[in-house]
Amino acid sequence: MAKMTLEELRNLRDAKKKEMTQRDGNEKSAQIIIGMGTCGIAAGAKGAFDAFLDELDSRNVTDTKITQTGCMGLCFSEPTVEVDVPGMPRVIYGNVDAKVARRIVTEHIIGKALVSDHIFDKPAADIIK
Amino acid sequence: MHATICDLITDLVQNSIEAQATEISLNVEETKTNLNIAIVDNGKGMSASTLKKAKDPFWSDGIKHKHRKVGLGLPFLFQTAEMTGGNVAIESEEGNGTTATITFDPAHVDLPVFGNFTTAAVTLMTYGFDGNLEIRHCLDEKEYSIEKQELIEILGDLNDLESLILLKEYISSNEEELRKT
Image 1 (cartoon, chains in turn green, brown):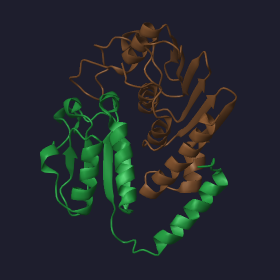
Image 2 (cartoon, each protein chain N blue to C red):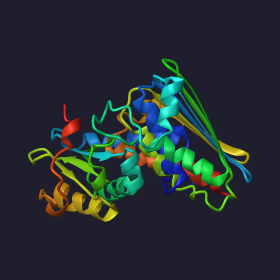
Image 3 (cartoon, rainbow over the protein chains, first blue to last red):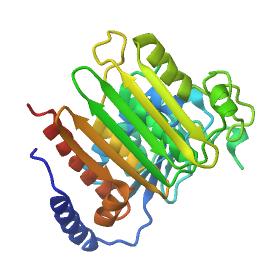
């Protein structure tokens, strides 16, 4: 790929925006929150981040937000990822490597079924306000 | 220590974010003989005694996690420097921010691999905080820089999947240009 300029980036964004407004934009979007504390980073959260991005893109999922947070207090099960899909319970997944991240996209976000073998419920008690 | 230099950088910039900085600059310069990393923030800073304690892996300020007795971010940095003959200088003033200046020897056999700078930059740019982050990456004579507020102006909400994908493409094209011989 040749080096992209800011102007080219702007044009690409405008083209995508046009595409988006043609779709039905009323649905609330799904949200993925990745724990990126020292523990998450050390356990490979960036690998999970890349896998989420790649899998969502290749499956043409669009109405999704990916954000990050610090440590969720579950360092033993890093990388941890919180997934909030409208109409489904909000869950925290543990030990999310690239493979599990791809499963979360296909099974949870697209298939609307929980990935049961990686559920860790909610953040540790000492960080819930 | 962290598996890659980029993991270490992510961790350190995140310290700036958690110190409520509104202006952060990350400068990474690679040459044949030196790997220089500078992180400057205007966050809440640390007193000399806090900074001294922060170097201890068995110390944490206890604000975010009440019962926690470890804090490994800065100790990872000092460990890496100590093991590879690197140099770390942290200057901090309470209320005024922190500057970390790091020099590593890229040829040292124990230095972790550099890692994926594109992913590090994308995650840092899209980590939720309201301020501005400027990232500059130089390799020998070549360099590029990106600025968070400018990217938001062009892409809108950076955490939208569409923005994330474009941002990754943009940074990765700049990285490729940097590595091209």
